[in-house]
Length: 465
Image 1: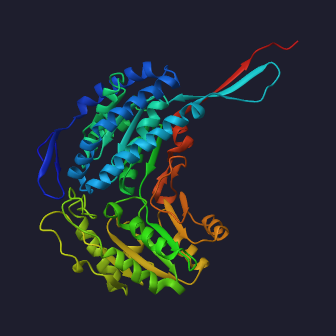
Image 2 (image 1 turned 60 degrees about the vertical axis):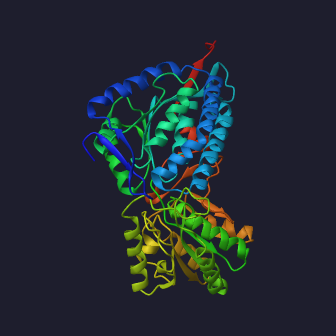
Image 3 (image 1 turned 90 degrees about the horizontal axis):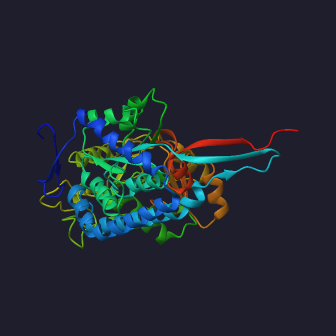
C-alpha cells in the first residue's frame, strides 16, 4: 500500500477491489469543522424533522441495497444472500429507532411541586465519531448513526479498512435524503489520523466496535477528555443445552449461531456445554449439520460459507484446533474433510468435542467456523464454566423450563441472555456487555439516550409569600 492510499483486497479473489485516498492529519480540523457547523443548525430541529430525514435515508438506502450488498461481499467475503439479509436487517433496526425517538427524547416532567417546574431534557452531545467494524458493516454502523442523527447530533463515520464503502453508503444515502452538508460524513483514515479525531476537542462522543486491543487504544486516545466512549469488543459466547431442550431445534440453531457469517460475529456461539444425557447425540447431530456447509465463491447462491475477511485467520483458527486436540480434545469434524476452493482465504469448518476448559479454543475469541463442545453434569457446572471467560456479551440456554432458564440466566455474567435463541439483536433491548466485552450500550431507548446529554431544568415559577 502506498502512502496515503487504502487498498481493499477481495478475500475470495485475492485481488484489489478498490483503492481509496486516505486523509492525513491536516484534514482533521476541516472535517470536524463541517460536522460542528452542521450540528449548530441540526441540534435545534424538531424530532419530527429528524425522523423525516431518517425516513428518507431509509428510502434512499433501500434503493441502493442490491449494490451495497454486492459491495459487502466483494470487500469482506460474506455470502451475497447473507449480505442482502444484512441490508434488510439494517433497515429494520433503523425503523425501530425512528419509531421510539419521539417518546424517548421528549422532556421528562417531574411531579408537581408548589412554585416550581422541573423537567429533564435530553440534549444532543454534538459530534459523534463512530468507528465501525467490518463483520456486520451495516448492522454495527446503524446502531449508532441513525440514533445519533435522531438525537440531534452530527456523525463522522470511520469504517473498517476492510469495508470502507459501507461508511460511504451511509453518507451517500443521507445526502440523497437531503441531509445538511457535514451532518453525516465518512472518513478513510489510518490509526494515527483516527486518533487525531478521537483527541479533537470538537468530537464529543466516540463509539468503537472491534478488538479488546483496539478498545484499549481508543480508551487511551480519549483519556483526559472527559467524553463518553462506547466499546463493544467481542465475546466468547457460551450455549448451554439442557437434556430437556427441543433437540433438533437446538442443534440447528446452535450450529447456525456458530457458523453464520463464517463465525465472524461478536455474538456467535463459540462454546457449547451439553448436559451429559444428550451429549453424544448432540455432538453427532451437530457434526452432520456442519458437514453440509458449502465453501466457494460468495457471490454464488449455493455457497453458505464464504472466505475469511482476514488473510491470517485460517492459520490462527487451525492453531486453536490443533492445540485443543493436542490437549485431549476429540476432532469430530476435521477441516481436512472439506475440499478447499482453489482461491480465497478459507477456513474449513471444525468441531472439537471434549476440550479442556482452559484451552485456547474455549478461552480465546475464535471469530471463525470452529466450535468447541463440552459435556456438563448439570446446571451448577454449566454456570461455572459459562462464567469462566474474560468476555461477557451474550449467552444462551436451550430448555423448555422457563423457571430454570431465568434462574440460570440471572447468574450468568453477560450483557444479553437468551432462552432458545442466539446470535440475534432485538433493537428494543440494549446491546451491551460486561468484562472485556466493553462498556456502554447501543440500540433500545438506552442506546438512544446514551447519545444525549442530560440537562436538569429547575424553574422557580412563583416567589414565596
